[in-house]
Length: 104
Image (cartoon, rainbow, N blue to C red; front, side):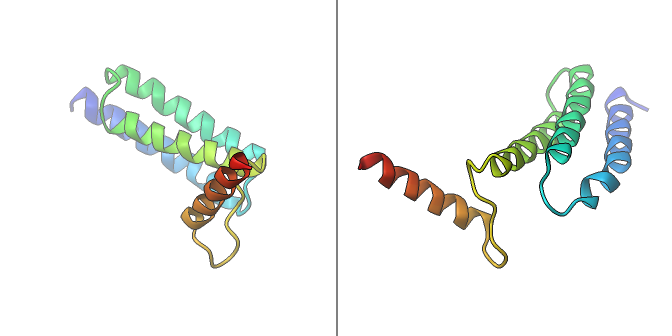
């Protein structure tokens, strides 16, 4: 078994262990944000053992991005999407509103 495969199996084990807690919360909370950040940090350490490039590093980055989006929602930098509205629409409306406010 290669080192990359072993690291991939460890990353999968981390995902399985942390998945239940990550999906248990429906609304963003600071606990959930910190949990996702911890998961990304663990995957970053595995990616470093893999020399920083590969699937594990990409997974860590995606998880970190999700945590930071949740943190933005919690601090009201970017509002959460209301039911029935896609988050991308909310971000676009927020960006347009920020741009028009800056022009005033």
